[in-house]
Amino acid sequence: MRIDLHTHSTASDGTDTPAELVRNAAAAGLDVVALTDHDTVGGHAEARAALPEGLTLVTGAELSCRLDGVSLHMLAYLFDPDEPELARERELVRDDRVPRARAMVGKLRELGVPVTWEQVARIAGDGAVGRPHIATALVELGVVGSVSDAFTSEWLANDGRAYVEKHELDPFDAIRLVKAAGGVTVFAHPLAVKRGSCVPQSAIAELAAAGLDGIEVDHMDHDDATRARLRGLAADFGLLTTGSSDYHGSRKTCRLGDYTTDPEVYGEIVRRSTGAFPVPGAGG
Figure 1 (spheres, one colour):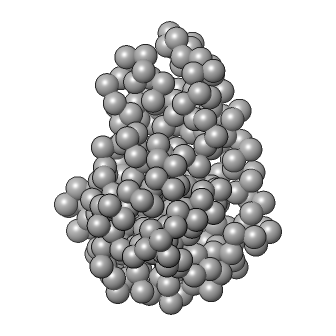
Figure 2 (figure 1 turned 45 degrees about the horizontal axis):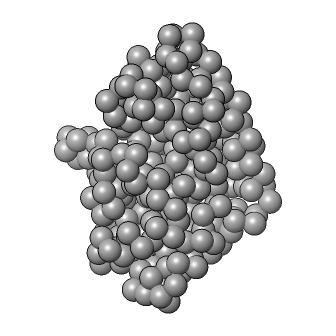
Figure 3 (figure 1 turned 90 degrees about the horizontal axis):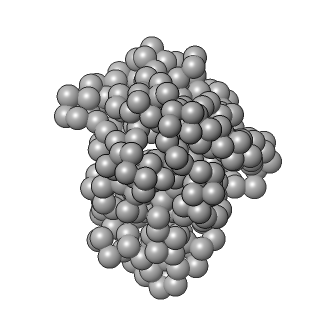
């Protein structure tokens, strides 16, 4: 089985619609794909309706969190999307995205970049606006060569000149809320240093003690040494290890299935979940 547990659609900051994403996942030879848009489950219904035969959909979301001033992302799988407390927190994060993006546009203009809110809003469309949309605007303007080049301290990284904080969950609260909704939590790209500051090893230990299920190890932003280090931490703290593409369509260079999750780990994620179940494709 080929299993990719971290992808994005136009419901957040990907370029494939949810329907296109599941069709592309099947074409890429995947058996299982998780749709994990940022702080939203808005793409799930469309993905279900278009799910090709032979492909299984795992519903999820990537939750925006912050610990001791450091941003981090928590992948949440197979939770009940209607559980009210978790739904309310997702809404708070989404509601803060527009004023935050407007503030980043303002900072960029102060730095001499002729970006406009109208340009960013056009790029975001109906998706939950975020930094990748602003980065795409910088590419359009010729300020940077690629979306990844915008995520530096010069521009949009967590310590960047144009960075603006947003409402984010405490990760311990995120774990509690996801578990209460019957879901499973995996710390996304925990040592992706190119994105900015990362939480220390001690924080991963504390999250594990609080009920974190796993960490994303095989990811484009982790080199071989980092992956080896993370596997050691997972063994020390009893955590599952996943691999994922973090696919964003044409917005990033990664492709569906570039990194995958072991079928036994996937099976354990499904076993632990009670809020929702994987959706088998019926040829939608």
